[in-house]
Image 1: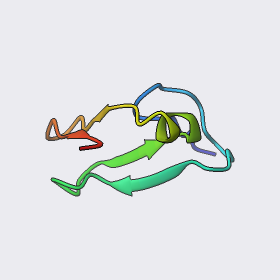
Image 2: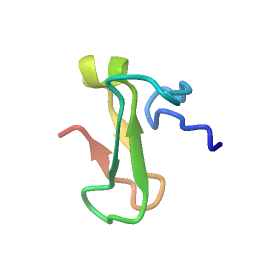
Image 3: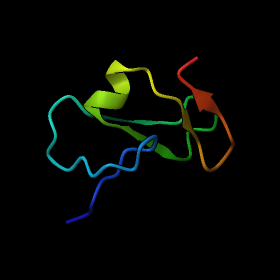
Length: 56
């Protein structure tokens, strides 16, 4: 089983409720993974492929 890590804090999120996975809004090449905590505090993430940073 693949270990899923939050893109922002690198915390393991496998089977964690409130987490999300989506393609980078800019390049659509990399999957961005966000844990519940980083979503709640609006922590910044950076796409390793194109350098896009979010959220806004």
